[in-house]
Amino acid sequence: MALGAVSLVSFGNIASAQNAVVDELNAYLNSLISARAPFTQESADGSTSTGTFYLQKPGKMRFEYDAPSPALLVADGQALAVFDKKSNRGPQRYPQSSTPLSLLTRPDIDITRSKFVQKLEAGSMQIHLTLFDPAEPGNGSIKMIFDRNPMALVEWIIVDGSGLESVVRLGKLTTNISLDSALFSIPMTIRALENDG
Image 1 (cartoon, rainbow, N blue to C red):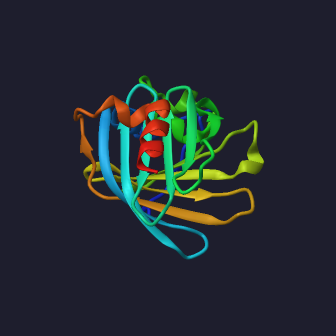
Image 2 (tube, one colour):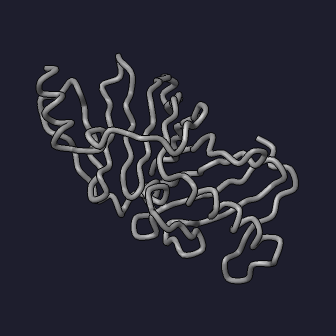
């Protein structure tokens, strides 16, 4: 996708025009208190799945995949739980703070202070923000893509440790809405899946 005129932001020495891009992105990210959007995921193996993305600050996210995908991801502010709805085993859990996408869930986002931000590319049409975990660089990276007119998170590209890419495209974000807290409860999600099974 064309960025238009591209400028790289170096956080060690940011020019005033680039500062404006940082301010624009920080303001948008901090305005996302809660959100819901449909998504389509194109995986590296060529498969496509759909679902619904939920965000509730501080700390909470959910990726609800539509059938037949068995995947479900729930972040409660402490842990990221990865469910396989067809499995009888419990979810795999990871510290949420170690996942770059957790930047979205912070209540006070400043991308210049995030340890995950690797690169910011700004063009007239889009902003690309590349994230990775410097403590685990072999885990790959996430590139978040924002449209600028109007400002909106529209896509992210996940590159795994072996270089394979998956693309998640968001539909229209419905923002600042009331969401059921049960969506972000790992224990309640476990019980709901057990009851469904």
